[in-house]
Length: 245
View 1 (cartoon, rainbow, N blue to C red):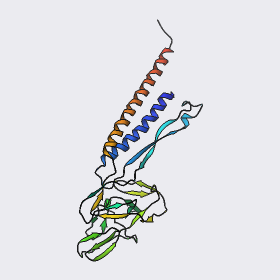
View 2 (cartoon, helix red, strand yellow):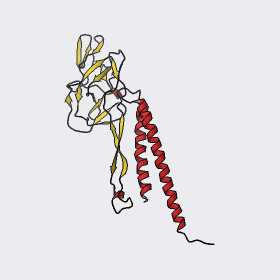
View 3 (tube, helix red, strand yellow):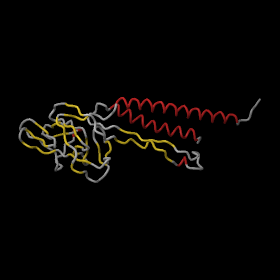
View 4 (cartoon, one colour):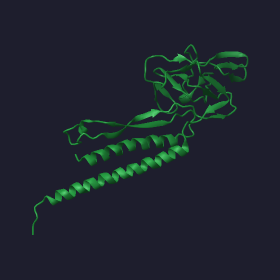
């Protein structure tokens, strides 16, 4: 394959992945606890770019894959006793159908049976790992260390955990994160809750729009490069044909 076309095509794929990540970020600017995707490029020597192959040994850009930006998002006050924002690197643990799930979205609700629920309707785990069931004993409150009360009755304490940096987590849809390692997280040592607040998405809208425009321009430039290289090959092929009068 023509090396110019190969390099341009690889760059287009990488920029296409980047455009998808940026578009997803901008679509979730109002999603509570959303963590932005970051795209990383790396030069690699693939099978088609080894010396002696059609790629002539050149390095080709590609998107290494979207990584999660776990930096803290801005906090916004809601005043709701069922809203909690995390201050620090930790996560709320939820009881998923096939194992624990994690989230930074502290927009909690209470089921008809009193179970405290997080995103996707998953039960919020207590420190013991069980669901927290709130009795109808009075107003609900949650304090800075996650103790849940109904009036003067303690219903349980929310399980807040921390991982190594970067956290071995992957997005699992919506506001959920799934563990990539079987090693359990540690109890939170540097994270507290801010009752009556929520953490907004950590997407910088002006920066994301600027990046989107820049990547779009690069994509179009690479597309034109591939088209011109293809036209040049076609022209040279025609020049080799026998001339007829």
